[in-house]
Length: 148
Image (cartoon, rainbow, N blue to C red; front, side, top):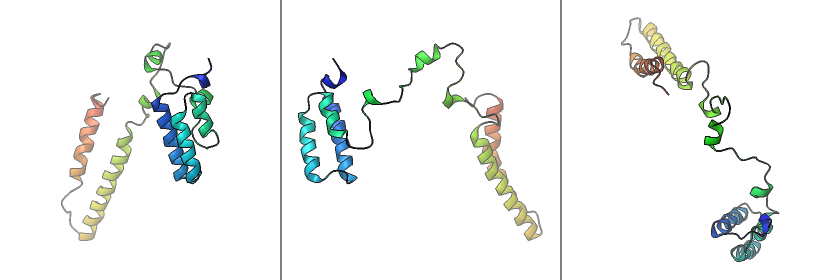
């Protein structure tokens, strides 16, 4: 039995109805055509019936015709030989990404403080020190290996 002959369920019918509503909102369907297709959607019995309702609409492609290969489940990926870290788990060589961005913010604050002090002719209160506190705690946490 092919996929097109398999019986469709309520969830699949609702997904097609949502896609038709999006096509109506985008101006791809007229109201009369949308109403006609919606009636056929809720009367559809198989995946083939549902596919016929959206084949001329751009956007989603039925899963059986998709060219995208599904990702293997995580358990199967971990069982692979010599699997390295996942793409989302890879670390940048320079440390965590927040370090450069927050360090840049602190640097800008120190420059503003220095310019303000030079303009006033006196050393004013070092308010960027408050900005350094989270940075120091983050660096300590990183050095102790607790940032994972």
